[in-house]
Length: 402
Length: 62
Ligand SMILES: Cc1cc2nc3c(=O)[nH]c(=O)nc-3n(C[C@H](O)[C@H](O)[C@H](O)COP(=O)(O)OP(=O)(O)OC[C@H]3O[C@@H](n4cnc5c(N)ncnc54)[C@H](O)[C@@H]3O)c2cc1C
Ligand code: SF4
Image (cartoon, rainbow over all chains, first blue to last red; front, side, top):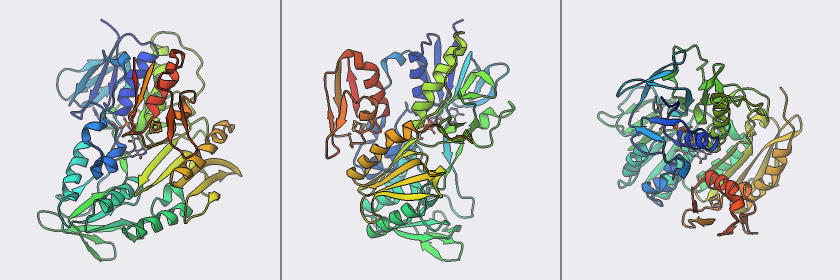
């Protein structure tokens, strides 16, 4: 029987892994198992262009590389469990698959609010189906929208909804500023102001206690008892890793799946993890394992993990430098863009304006021990280009040691 | 090698210019410029650029 690598998860991480296995010289079989019915598609536009109706859903599909043309896609199929010692995974349809190598690429699912109230009218934004459903509701006449959670996705959806001309949009968050956890107060303030100027309302420093309505939601009850009338609710309160299927194998699954610096899982050279689900140490920084939910990570992790896996399976084990990507992130809200390079969260105690000012285009630097670890630009194209100029400097920095 | 950027999709992210500076660059106003028939020796770079484009706007045709 030919040797086989099974990729669990059929989105960007799974696609990039399959392509990179071929690029790394793997000639055996590759089977990707994904529970969504679609071929891999690009998620960022789901809260931006596609939700706004400026781009069609069909434009989201990735074009797989020619080298990956012979990959077998088992779509609409879920991996329900894995037995790593026996090298098998069980599927929800059909017999178990045995593997020589396994790539974990199952990503995340949105967290839900557990407080009481009806479910109809409440949305999350992770999948194509989610975005289609939300788009239909935002296009009903005169809707009032409440977005719970002022993180990246919440702020993007709020901006898109305002752009679509809905009656009103209110963003609720227990924290005092939007995106303050990843970006800090300076940019949190600047973002709040920009959103308010464009018509987004905020209820900050308060949580959600429940939802009103019989069959469908009609209002959001805040912790202080205030009720915000709502026809559409978007819950953007973070996400949790899809790792249940890996339980029972003695792995650390406390936040995604823990990997070593070569993206290997549980000390097993035949199992690697890629994308949002991987909690990996970044040799560029302090070596503390973290998950990174940035679009650049599925591609970066897939390149490294595929090399490590193929080297093991073909017995060409070489010494690899440990994984050390430069995280890159962007977010589009209204007509402005946030562009981030590096790890701003590691430098939140020493935030400096490098260029511009809070009211216009601004470039912000994040430092630790006096050293620059991340830059974030907010504004138009000139600001993003300013951030790009610091990218080379961030790439050249020697590693931060713990 | 033939490179096509779908300019309706491109939003001037500039990620391609980091990955393949010989083929893609940004002008002073931050808009994309690119070489549509780069040398075949640059294929790896161009594939990398196509991978990192957030809008998936770059196509390599043969
Ligand atoms: C609305 C939205 C907007 C975003 N915008 C940005 C942005 O502007 N900038 C940015 O940098 N990043 C952004 N991101 C983040 C980026 O899209 C993610 O980092 C990326 O999608 C991660 O890809 P992944 O393949 O690791 O995980 P996922 O995309 O979560 O893919 C995992 C796949 O595995 C499937 N799966 C799960 N469990 C199983 C199982 N047991 N068996 C089989 N299949 C399974 C899932 O259904 C899914 O298809 C955004 C994300 C979303 C949702
Ligand atoms: S990375 Fe994509 S969107 Fe950005 S400039 Fe290049 S082609 Fe355009």
